[in-house]
Amino acid sequence: MNVCYTMRKPDFLLFLVLVLASQVYSDPLDYAEDPETTQSVVTSPEPLSRIVFVNDLPPGETTLFEFMRGAKVYVTSSRDNGAAEYEENIHILTPGVDGDFRKMSEVGGKVNKDTGEKTPVFGTLTNQISIRNNNSVRSTTKNPGIIYFLSASDDKHFSDVYESDQHQKVVVFVRSDNIENRYVTLLNPTGAVRISNIHFIDGLTALTVTAGGLEETKSTNFTIHDIGKDAALTEAPLHFVEPVLTFHKQLAIFPGSAFEFTAAGKELSDYMVFQMKWSDWSLGMSRNYMLRNESTSFKHVFNATEQDSEFDIQMFGEIGESSSLKVSYDGLHGAGSEIFEKQPLERLTKSMKGQKVTVEYQRGPQDTTKGVLVRVECSRLLFSGF
Image (cartoon, rainbow, N blue to C red; front, side):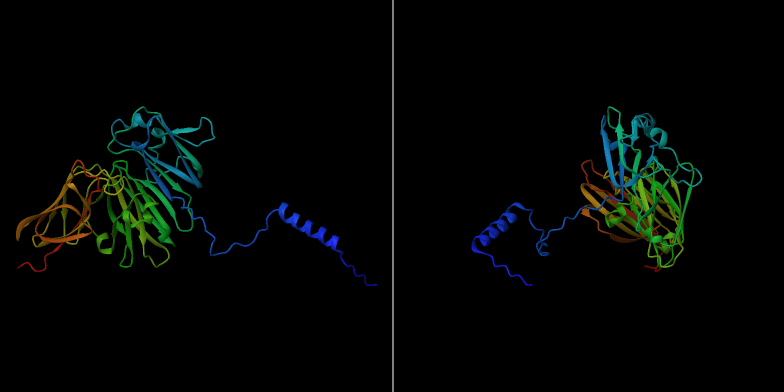
């Protein structure tokens, strides 16, 4: 039997009141937002690495470093006089573990003597790491100790950490089916390193040398040089005057690709002489050219072993108002010089005939630029009659 119910007017009014009350006192409905008015929050990605120099640690304070995906910490002690006593009071600890800390003086010298590979202070990834400076004054060492944080590896970044040794050469060899994702970071406690015997760089690849750690490789502003096939064959010394360097092979198209180089820590003076044959190239660069903005003056002399020689010179960086860069040449075809002042160099190129080229950089006391980098290549003079 079908029953039909007809709502009377008082019942209808009561029903309407109940409906309105339910909308007032109940939770608001979740309607889909208009995609055109929705604002997404973009957070900056976690840095791949971070470099901390002992000279930058405030005395009497503890600095906390946090990493969402976890990180490892590598420590290299300064070789300067008096550094060991200062680093005795630099403590590395993981928060939440009472009394568990490592003295920088104890862990900073730990390195595999056969391979040069560094061992992290804490074997596992740590999300929080604190550095406590128990000294009463800042460190003033010329080449400060280095604390290097390296985030967890992912599909795009896998890194090895080495230390250059002043007393023993280190041969770094890396082979990988995905070589473009492999990085080698070199910590230089003497502030500079000599690179030689570069192998496995062919016409389709390049070995990029970057000032800084894994984080800085993302920016071309930190690239010091791309070493191609011809440049890899040089027998002249390549001195990179940076405390932290990262090497990365690019453009490899075959699986199982590799790269290799020999590293040796160097204590460099501001005056250097380089002997060069045809097809050799080398570098003249102010100390800490990229990384710390504490560049210094230098004078580098490049001598050709053959008479009919010329030099191709590329200059990078910026010359401050109180600084100058002088390039001089001398040889069978005459002598001369050119002075550059107060200008961005922006890969300025010069060709000079001669047996000797001298690059002299005078940095003014008020200069705040990052300094200069000069690439010098020696070649045979094709038209010696002119």
